[in-house]
Image (tube, rainbow, N blue to C red):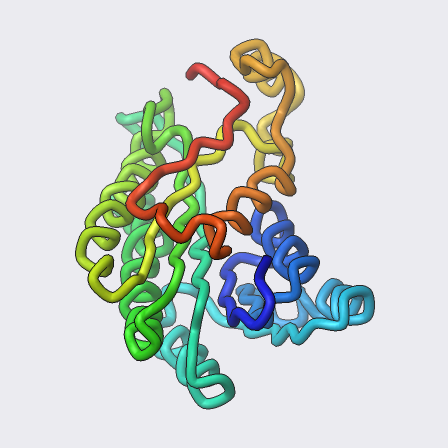
Length: 246
């Protein structure tokens, strides 16, 4: 599906980001895989290269470090003169009830989940415009659509991701750059498991399909949106949530 396409994926060290990287490798993309902790991707990247014969370049930076983010796009430009796919997956979740929200909490979440994504889109568009082609995929969340108690800051940030997706899609369509979002529901990741089995059981009771989703199921949606199979889809928010009601 992704032959000869150059992709940058952020937040690849675990969960959904790692699954997207694996799915794109299976589909023969040339990948720049980003993570914050230096060396955290080396083992899995080497395995994927060995298994699939693809080119994967690990890049390490904090999403809020704009200069290092920019440097990554310069590297992609120098090596390939193009960027076909951007997957904005990196994000943070810091939950608090309304009365306990602090200025630092708001700044920390919005710096990564919103401001860094806008910077990333800005840099990507400069490369994509040259070829009048590109697919940008932003990872939002079901709570960005529906809200959830105790997550006013996180849900607001993911709601902002949906709004920026729809706006960017309208602004960039004349350059044949498509912008879509994926809104995962309850996905079986380390982050979700950290809330405890009792709360997870309660969540599952609210999911139409009766189970947690897998990171691979979100990755499949990302691969579709990255591919030419979705060439007439832009400005959409694809829910991968198993019919969850929250």
